[in-house]
Length: 202
Image (cartoon, rainbow, N blue to C red; front, side):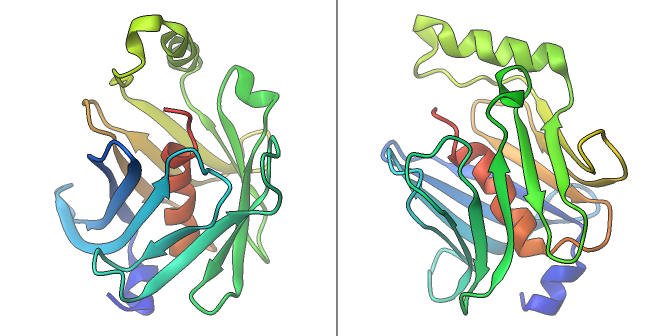
């Protein structure tokens, strides 16, 4: 899928592939009926190296880079990640807000020439339950399977919605990205959606 076709897409599906050592993700376009369409991206995040550059390719062949994202400083809480295209041009940034994320995971997605989008967990009760789950000793190798959702809106107080990322029910992580507003590069949206899972500790 070329860049023009990619930018015309309004929804994608992100699946984390099974691998104990590396977090790998397949991103496909979503058909109107919700089923997976054409593969548009493939990414991987090595375990224990969340601040190294993550490469997102156009497919599993890894022949062509779609984009990359990398933290400005290693081991920096709330580090700003810059997303770049295959030629190294900046597409935007994202970073987590550590204090706000204590209760509900919150990210800021920076878009050049447009207002930032603030993405936070939609359901506060589910957000608390996720945190309790992480502290339970017997859940180290059992993922939190209940659906949870992120709404990315303009401004910190929840303005116009620009993107949603919904985690589906199931043992394997699967997310649906829906883009609801203009001015958001699809490569930036895909990188942020992958990071929501890849940069978690589990």
